[in-house]
Picture (cartoon, rainbow, N blue to C red):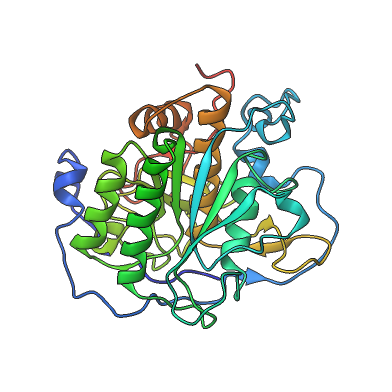
Length: 331
């Protein structure tokens, strides 16, 4: 679904100001629900040998030398935990090989499993065995979206707090990631929940939003300690729907991204939006945590930004000109 819930261009003279100051400059009233629209084109066909999105964040894209892709590395150790705050996950899908677990459900009178497919699609990009970036990570479902594709801000805040406390209690905060591929208008309390998570050394990755506006008046896109991700296409141009601006840290593939079907159907389904873009970066975070033994959100965020490709995004509109990349040969 295209998560169209997300701002206002800032003049160039503001570009040198800090993200922490400028991101929350506009604070409209918070809505009661998370507006969501279908983001997945339901098509089934054989998987392409090299999905464009995985090539784009791999060494082969930059070097064109046939280097192994990070997502094909069968030797990568497990160890990273990704809390997927979304609509749930189809836990029994073969693509997850028992690595998708139920965490908590904040939707009243709702089953724990995914009723709309969005969370399953994001989990497929983060860590599916076929379409995922980090194939061996453990994913924990935290449900905040109901069967209508809607939720409430308080559910998200509760979910972030629960994931933070769960990771701390299990002693895995430093090697945990929270993926939030949803959002709505600016909320100081939501952004504060993100801050508490990063204070606990959890890496938080959020989608910028799909309104083709600045991300600064949306949450958690405007959270200063989150990694905020905008969407780009195969031509390395900002996707027309993607939010932008000083709150955006990085771009990642977000148009027609193949991922796990919500059922047990063969072949991919396709997702477009800043939701799948964020899922790529969460996958990269998990990859770095596992393969390089990184610990803590500052180290992970620094590695993601250092590994990214600089200056390749067109029409970035005041966003940082960085494209997510796995960092091989870029140390």
